[in-house]
Length: 127
Image (cartoon, rainbow, N blue to C red; front, top):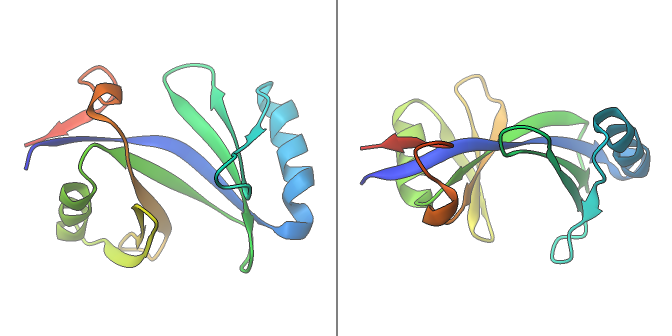
């Protein structure tokens, strides 16, 4: 099925004890204030100057610090199937998105976005 997708944000995952310091660091490093999400308080995010790229600092309940990317799409199932055909694997569905692993085992997420937000000037159309 035809759909759009794009890498939308870089996510920095950090354990709880480092989260506040990490938010403080990246706010200063990017010059962009990071706001706590109302619905998901373990996330602090900011839009970076430029071409619609976000930076998200995620408080991990467990695990070590890491970085991953979020892919936004207007059709999650079509995008997940496309990525599986390329060698990715589904790990876990969380709410309305998928946590996946690329062929090297690195995590990334596929999240829904609106068709209005995904256009030819800022996303890839897959036929």
